[in-house]
Length: 222
Image (cartoon, rainbow, N blue to C red; front, side, top):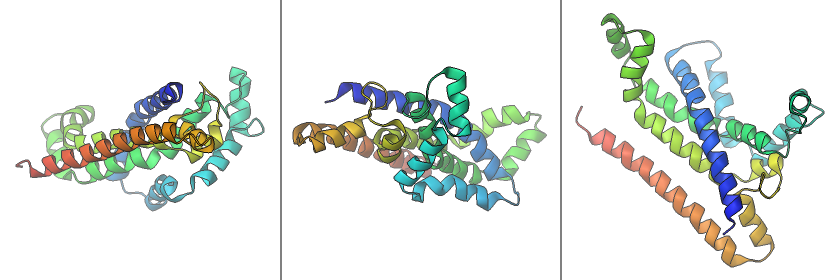
């Protein structure tokens, strides 16, 4: 087991989830409740990482993060360090390629909420903020939980974008998915199998837990 690579993966998954879920919740709620002309375009943009090949997304992000691009140049000027092939760049890329996994489950949860529930809360004197905390969030909690688990699990297993943007720097950007690839290349089947089994087990348990929670919620008397 490549423990440093696993630690990098867990660190990346943790910060991606912590940063993306609150931001994704704001975006998901806005898309679910509002009607605007470009809504279909915005939803398509959010879903794009699901169908775009990881190497293509990784290439464009790598180009965007390079010192010759505006973002990469600005970052290097501010922090005197490159954005590409760094953990910070890897984290920013992770936030982008996890957008659909974070936003779509929460959007569906907010869309399933009856509009008159919010209006009744406002008529009862609750502010918009308290309505969100005391009414909307408890009703949408399964969507939030699903988004959290999917974002964390997907980050652990991502390979293409991680390799393109972060490279393979031990202790910095080498994740467990890249470590598996390295072990396969080195014909170390035992280590590759061990790490693959870990990711397989985690992914299966995570998805199973999502289905279990959603099934229990549906069976709960209304």
